[in-house]
Length: 242
Image (tube, rainbow, N blue to C red; front, top):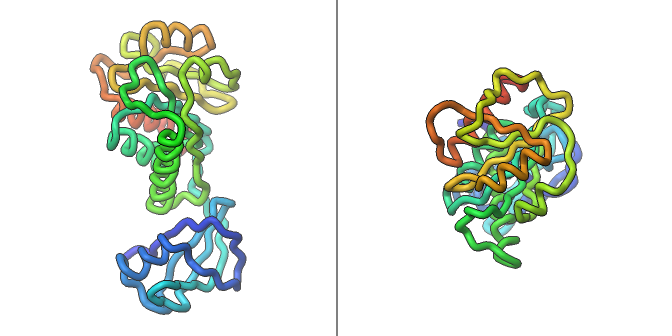
């Protein structure tokens, strides 16, 4: 079995004993059934990771000793920010999870004309926290030591009015431009993807007016989660670390 990896949001330092947070402790003791002296890897999103071993595994308390720091990173040289139209339930979770595995730098969930999920106020913040948890789990699984942030939900018109640098792309199945014909970006990529049903014609027009280039991923219409993962894979293949 591969050495378990866990994110813990506490300061880490070689030679220090740490108490694992309740969720991580429960996973170690009840799910994985790890015993004292079992190896694990801990990281806190500040870069690098620590090899550690369990010192004690009790019902309500699990501690570990940080033994060795490694500067290993798995970040892509291509910084991709994805603005994803919020989709239903598991589709959005899947998109967030796989985007992290594919090296995305940050995620902004946006509310568009065709977004069918009604998220406001406290409910919206709860979903953002849930998606951030999906990000953490994906980092633990994929070997990433830096945790992408899920930004607060924002409406499309507010988001599109904000200035941003680098190459700006919007997916549109009727676009004529292909990704492979573009020059490599110098300052990263901002990627705009619609929800189920895609972006409206007005939203595409506003995006193009804001400097976004419409790109097509072939003759077939892709689901929102398929489109996101396909273009992220292409970006990593063309200009990233695939």
